[in-house]
Length: 445
Image (cartoon, rainbow, N blue to C red; front, side, top):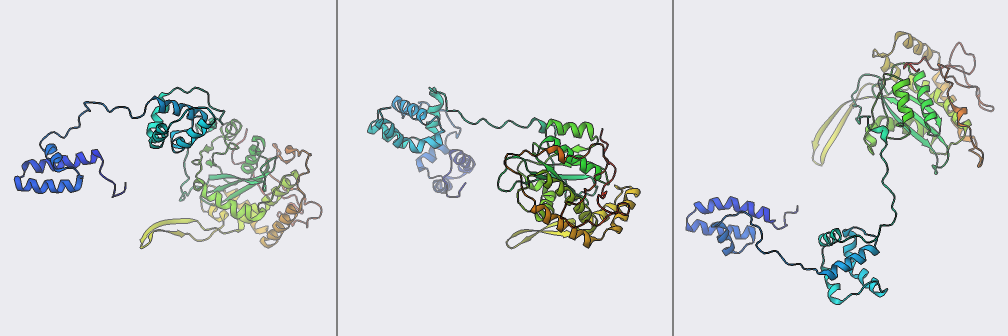
């Protein structure tokens, strides 16, 4: 409310209630000064203030009701105009009543007079709303798009935000990155990414499309490779994550995992995985369209090598403190970060990983040449982006991209023809394929 706005009746009555106590206790000269003050504040006549001060200030019902300002001619005109405009709301209809009435009269739909046009110019939005509410709607409205049905799978999944200072590994933010280019039509490659809030451990898998079959397969790949158990999975409200098939997967096949979701249209609820979507996925593959089985298989080879390069060798900094300071131009948030450390080292500082898996990862890191691995990642990116896209009219077989359900580990395929030779990452495997994963940390039936 602006300061210059006049007092409402309720505000004026409340003020007069306070002043009446002082007025009745004051002498004649003091009453005169109080009346002068009330005149300035309320803008009421002095005689009206004297009558109010010497009487009860309780609001009384009107003894004689106010007569109707607009007659049946206005009601009939509003009914015709509202029907012609498909019964739009009074806020949209009222400013256009005069010209709409003249236009319909020119086409013989109604009769207008100067008095009617004058009333249609003066009528308020609230009055039009009341008239339309009591007049019967003669014709049905034109078909309109029905409101979107809510996703029933979201009802039992709580909304929350994983705390930024979570210290227990296993709380994963999840998101899906679309590699559709400028068109979202047809099937195309998507990157399913899970990022652990406590350690920044990242898992990326390329899936072909958004069907429950490939999303479930992507989660199976990740669960087979994770070296520590999953406590919570926290995606957004995408129907690719919340449908009957995926709910069955988490409740029946991958037991012990807690499901939660972010608030609708609140990207900052998944701020960590959103940041990694940019620095780990978009930075490597860009925004070009990838829509073939070959590109999906090669993208998974890339993500397998990126898994080792990022989680074992890339130090990350974790937020440890947020403070607010008041400055001359507003509040400022100061953030403090801890010492940079790799996700693997952060994981080893907790009790979430077993000694056997820790030794296995440490031996794997000792055998990898990070400079060679970086070059291999670059070669895979160049080769992937050079592959042709899907041929119009030819259907790609999504099942060719699926993870073998009976294989407990994800292995890299042989490098494609023309790609530089991949250096071995394991002493047991002299050439590709290379095993970069472990047994399942979450039991799957």
